[in-house]
Length: 230
Image 1 (cartoon, rainbow, N blue to C red):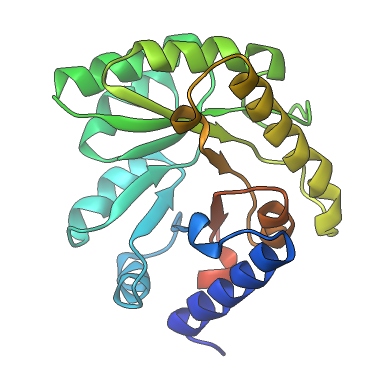
Image 2: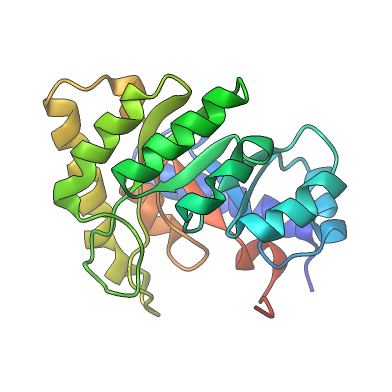
């Protein structure tokens, strides 16, 4: 069985190969290690291997784990966020990938402003229309993106999506392409490139396709830590 460090090294090699295939610089792809359900000692092993960016899915779990881990980690919330949990976010997260409504953007803006902090925020878009997936309808992405821009404590940086699960990574390609097209449409309307530089898409099963389609952040858990229990 490979170690966590070896898994991370192998992932970086695969990222580099996928980037080369698409004539991209692999340094423009952030490996975000998703640590939901993973105990803190295993997260520290990944940290010791040089990993600095980690993602959590649930606020409550993050509240329990993050205080136990060393400083120097950049924390991302990648799971669905209920408005009533936004008050906990400034103490926990530097990035939130799952802003899917104007009211949530407003609430986050207020909470980070009250704490004198800023947060990088992405609009989560449900490009597949799958009922079990969170995220806004593509037609609402601009409205939510604009709401983030209007909050001084939030920095709009891009878009996120989760395609339907499939055993075939190629099934994810059209969904990744759709998110990239939404980003390009927003750019064409005059929104600044700095506010649209991030495409958070791709997980352990399809990240290479995501990189080929322009992902700048890939969210990897299983390929680092192995299969989860929950």
